[in-house]
Amino acid sequence: MSNQSILLTSDNKGGSSKKTLMVFVVMLLLAISIRMYHIMDPPLGHHKIRQYRSVLIANWFYYELSPTDDAVLMDVFRTHHPPILEPPIVEAVAAGFYWLLDNPHVGIARLLSVFYWTIGAIFFFRIARLLFTDIAVLFASFFYLFLPYLIITSRSFQPEPLLMMMILISVYYSIQYIQNENTKFWFLATMTAGLAILIKPVALFMLWPTLLFMALRKYGLTRQLLQPKHIVYLIFSLVPALIYYLFGMMQMQSIQGQPGLQFRPELLLHSKFWIGWLHQIGYVTGYIPFALGLIGLMVMPKSLAKSLCLGASLGYLALGLVFNQAMHTHNYYQLPYLPFMILAVSYFVTKWFLPYFSVLKLRYLIIALVCIIMCIALPLTYLVATDQWKPFYSKHKEKIWFAGSLFVGHPDIKQWLSGSSEFIALANEMKQHMDNKYPVIIYSGGYYRPLMYHMEVLAGQWRYSHPARILTTTQEVEEKMNHILSIRDFKYFLFTRLSDYQKRTALKQYLDTHYTVLVDAKDYVLYDLKSPL
Image (tube, rainbow, N blue to C red; front, side):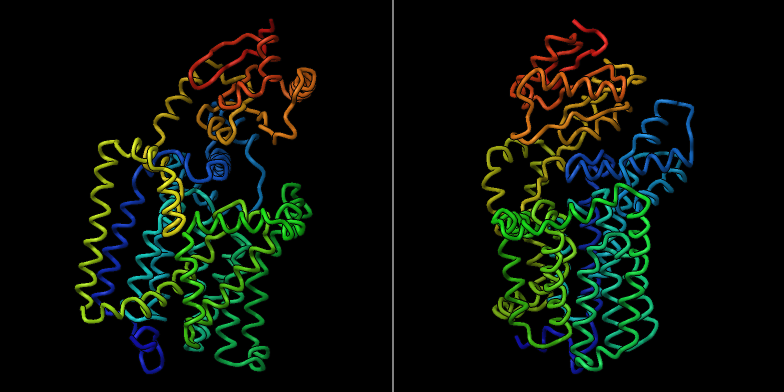
């Protein structure tokens, strides 16, 4: 299979056929239906701490728009919301829909995330059509629609689904501008790039290099530097984010310390940073697809597609070095690079593997693809429908994760499959034992914000510490407890991280000897701080 049969060139124009478009629509509808599973449940799986940050901020906005007579509820969401970091755009949009529907249900926000992802997927398909012919377009679209990590994260109430949508829209119009030199496309690329960078500055590391490398290929170095439109693009795409973050640095304490948290130069000299980054790659995409993407980039002939993917790859490297704290600990920092990696993988697969199937027509490859999907989907559907996936997953978890880290990533799909009914029932049970007019100290690890939200209580967090900072004496615990109680008059202490309950001997001993146990249940222990022994 020649390069020209994969890459679209001046001699090979036209994009994909109607048949390819129909197959994409079918795949898209299937992908959307997969994402609807448990979509109205609380977001307790993928980065729940980060998601409930958005949940609490969206509820704060909603109760500002639509106040309630419930004083406790107003206090919980209006005065005890998390601090603002990046612009709360997705939270504001969700709050607007809450207000329109008169229902602050987090499922609405998750549906909006799927909507953003769907629009992004459509533009990804359009990008692939500008670069590749039919078979590569279908392969790239299939990869983007059904990569397990993208299924999980596209349902997440975080800025990322909207961010990815805006990055893909901006890249699409950037390609159109480079190909056609149309001012309309340049304007759309600039405006959407500005919005993407405003949502999260990480977008800059994908959008600037991709445009510059594509322009460099077309105009050369001298003309590239003298292009006024490119300079204006760089300036105006940065201005909205620059205004917001300069204002935030002056007025918002929560933003002032972010640069020092995101970039830690000493990490570059530690192996844990590089190993952590490698682990995130295995978690998100799998090592083999990532490696195939790099190989595909190297063997791809000089073309618009190569310039695009090369710019994105260098941007991804710069992103990892600048945001090095998050890159090796937060898997969603891999997201901006995924579309470009998938394009490079698609080129490599269609160039080096599919020639062996060149005797087959496209329709037979599509039929084979559908059969493969059904062979995977039917057993999984049976396991999920009969609830037999839990023992299967528990028994083979390590093998599943190992295979996933090689081939398709291994995001934790347990919460997605099982739903959140057990957690909600537990939160409601705990709520029955407390008067939510009084605040509670919660020791629960990542479930602090979800519990605060679902129990509708004022809460403070007893942070579970690094082993080196664990309080080892009752005197240290007493000093910390007195400090907390001097800040707010807490009535309850709720311990839900029972894996730590027996380990924190000083904390447990202090609570047992000073306060009454209201409830000692299987999943939690509740102390009454107003009933000292």
